[in-house]
Structure formats: structure tokens, C-alpha cells
Amino acid sequence: MKTVLIFETGDGTFDESVLAIDKFSLFNVRSTAGDTRMGGEDFDYRVVVHFIEEFKLKHRKDLRYNQRAVRRLRIVCCTKSPLSSYSEVHE
Image (cartoon, rainbow, N blue to C red; front, side):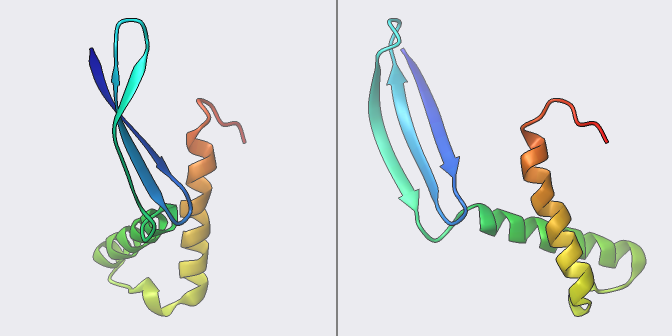
């Protein structure tokens, strides 16, 4: 018997399930839960904030006051998601 955790992150939600899987690959759902106040957008926001702080430490400039820079950083952070599903990316 194996116990596995499955989670899915949508734009605005986070869902998880715990399954017990037997040797015949039959499964039993042990628990399931979700959070409608947390999702992919929240993770994206935290990544952007992280890089703003890193930039501030390295270059002593606070990007929070430069809306264009924050917008570009958000685009780059969000572009990372689709690229993560590829094993190779060619320019």
C-alpha cells in the first residue's frame, strides 16, 4: 500500500488529495481539501516580490516604484510557468 499526495494549483485555488493505492493500482481517497483564497497568482506574486528584494539587495534600487519594471518582471515570472513543462526550449 502506497500513500500519495496529489495537488493542483489553479489561478486562484489550491486543491490537494491524499490517496492510498494498493498493489492492484486501486485507490482510496483518504482526504481532500482546498483553499479558494490561494492559487497560482499568489505564487506568482511571491516570486515577483522575491526578485524585487533580490534586485534591491544587489543594486540598491527599489523596483516597486518603477511600474514598468514591475510589469516586465511579472511577465518574465509568468512566462516561466509554461516553459517549465518543456524538457527543452530553443530560441
